Length: 295
Image (tube, rainbow, N blue to C red; front, side):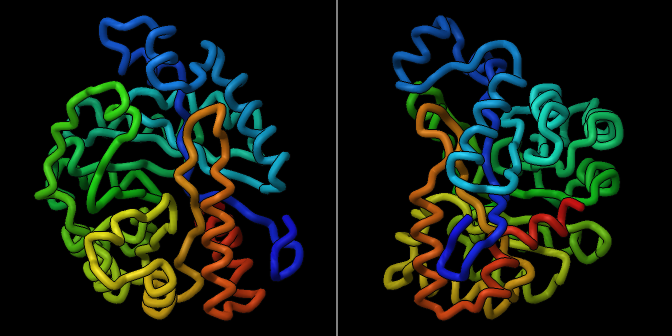
């Protein structure tokens, strides 16, 4: 992709595969046609490879090299595995897991060893567990990369459908990950959205644990919880603490017809320009760090 630093291989470290099974799980008593009308979104067909093709067409249209796609509810590993199998050089598969489920360790092993998915995604507030919970240990030990959503958690599709989100913010502090990260130095942990409101704590964690990364995804609207803070200051502080080697560009793209959220990219590139980031650092943040993480 052409950028202010010349041609850069851009990879998105955070996008979601909103599969047909996801919409079926959320529909409740509604038909999928009614869900589509209420959301104003496209509901994909039953074949995940068709949705994968649509994502790859988006990558081609915008000039991206690769993108992570996250299976966005527990049990949907098969959808993202099929997508990645169809386009192994363009898509990187992550999957959501509830580690409190009885079959979680076996499901994690199967997703990683059999299906070839690259990272397990944990949502402590959503599934109401602490990263200190002993049930998390076998999940972490089975993975090379663990994505952990900390901070404020809102799920736009649930809000649009009027569904309750009974999340528990007690489990949202990034420092809850501190001991786990220290005990598993061979595992790489990714905190999305700069900690989503726990920015200070995310900085502390990154300073103490060299195996923790942050991603830059979404609008980062959590900034409003810290008056006076802006996105340029967030990037500057994150780069100072994490260094350009542990910051991963992402958008949090998810639904069609919007597709890949290019506005996030343009905004963040503008911030990096304002900070005077050099070409080497820009290449790392915009793509190379993800490539190394998932190699």
